[in-house]
Length: 432
Ligand code: GLC
Image (cartoon, rainbow, N blue to C red; front, side, top):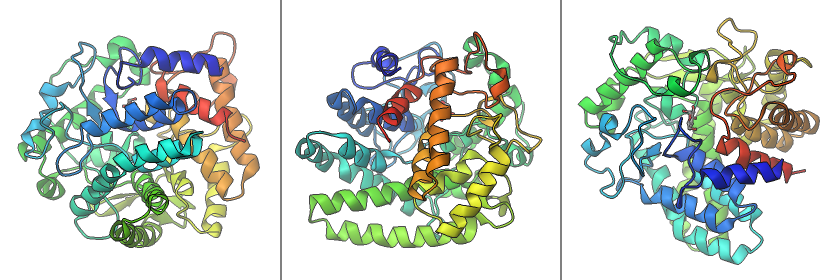
């Protein structure tokens, strides 16, 4: 299994960065790169470092890190750079072509993982010293520009920023947006069956939000004021908090940098406090998203709801509750953990992208989080389920949680030979 995973990562390497998979995603995606670097670190640390430095080469002058870096041209992806027009923003990178939106901030904890995995600790620390301020600048960007109410929680202005593109979570927001029906030529459905991808109507909404952001040249203040989509996402904020903690660890190892350490502690305290007060839903026993535009919680449980375990955010009692919710709404012996959306909800769809299928990056986080809180058995189940799905259905982008559908010739969904599936399984196989 590990051999095949390495082969996939080798095939998807483009001399400087790794594409998520061929055809469907032909560029560098930011949080993909982070997960990929963790896998690479196990067999080629030089490439893991390069993956991260290439990503940071595309960082904007204001610390912003774009979600896609368009290193090359491609005929197989829409919307491309000419649609996104990130250059409208005065601080966008003059060297790289990118989108004007971001993705969950994973780079802090990824550096910490590289340190954990590295055999030569001195060498990796030298690398980390070179790039760690880039991560800090990225976090400073978030707290300065994405937290209009100064709460310690940052917003995302597009569902693509969440990483969980077409989650049913967004349905209510989209319904309130009144997006026009647009005409465009998508490319994803040339490669993957529409039943596994977002609908045309959903794409209308995705593009409509970008149109509005472009109207304001991607100005954060204007976006906070006018974007119809403005959400405080527990997954996104948990990644930031986990990465803050990693920065604290790394700066302590490096020494000096007291001012940054003080600032990180202040961010951290405020963020965790508001996170627990505002996003934990007692009734559901899980964290939920908050729709900042319409000032209402989005009362649904998704795999994102459990990511705070990975960042050490809940107290033990809350964690106990969350695990009950996990088992009630996602568990059951006849299902693999962990579906991306509440199986008991009518919007659940086991085949369609983020509306139900299992994703390995969320499982990877869930495994660590559960272990940290003492739920060793369930953590093991998440790990074994991940391995089993890949063994039975291939190194796909996402997987059907229903065990009954697996048989001879069953395949996963979305793109095949998917990089983070390969990378994170290498890491999981190395963990006990
Ligand atoms: C899809 C996923 C997103 C990922 C991207 C590239 O858009 O939803 O999370 O980063 O593909 O793999």
